[in-house]
Length: 487
Image 1 (cartoon, one colour):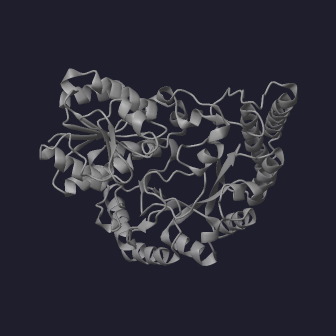
Image 2 (cartoon, rainbow, N blue to C red):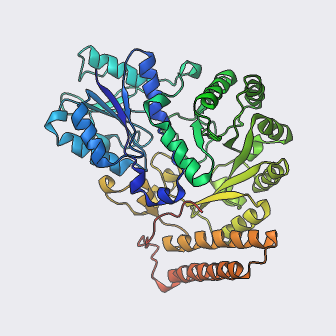
Image 3 (spheres, rainbow, N blue to C red):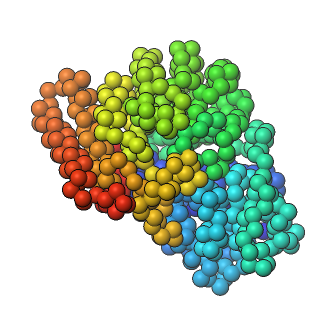
């Protein structure tokens, strides 16, 4: 059986990513590939990151896979739809079973099936994908009703969704991602070329026990399952010996959930000589001096601590269950412990006022993280945030030609206001850092001051537009720019 895993992210069509040059392999597909291989099913992974749509088309036409399994998310959705249209237009691919998986499926089942997919894998994919392949091999297609975790169109033309599949509890049963199926060296070389350091991703856990209202839990649910520290250390040891990455990015939502696991991890990477410098994401209340010490001893060089806002009122509205003061203190403590810090900021959350944005800027100045990303809030279907604003949506584009990022809702100020607010915060923080550093670059300082003033004037203009009637609270908001994501 000819099985092909693929996706629809083409780096050379993404101008932002070409400037950043920090691509990572499709880790989820590599787990699926390894799982099938472990159970006796050979497969191929067509990684589109450094490829093109045209190259992918040629590959599929040449290989004519029996099963084409495609990963989709908000970033790749439109590319996936184009890929589906292509597959369905080709007679030589008419018998290919097209399977989709990923976080964007659970709340958009009818639409994705309408694009031409045969089967959707809802939630965690390994067990469902294996059962699907076994059913195809046994000649059961299209009778998949006995397999949990799927959605498909039955023989009567009706959308059928089978019961949800239980999560894989024993995640140590998962093999290492099938990295040999892709050109991993190309990722490492690109990182090295543009950043002088190569980087690779590793996953240690599935799910997240927290309840942030803007965060999607469509794949792994609100759970917490973790690979043993010994298994993770063994993977790091393998990566160190075979690929020699300069650093690792742990993709887990909250790396320090379990302090007991972290202690075991520290012991195992030291015992196995598996230390690789790494960065990770966590929450402020899951950090303390002992944890910081363990992280540093394990090889950690940078910790990303979720903040989202400097306003406690907005943090509480997000159901973050942490204090802004605690985030500030742990950011400072992390730097004192000799590690870099990063944080995430979100503007435009429902109910946020200009006073809240001032508090966020003040928070960034006090915490003074080495890095931060800033996003304008957008509602992902299925999240608490989407439920909060679904009756206040002012822009609901056509599903087949847009993503959830294009949805807009009634905010305190016009959408354009937040574009200027992002610029104001970013440039104000840069100016603050310049002043703290005591650098005498007057020209750079003047440029930043000018950018701050221009951004602030833009905020004031669009804030006043509410009174002038340019922005109607009946729902006619303007949206002239895409979300600003990374500074």
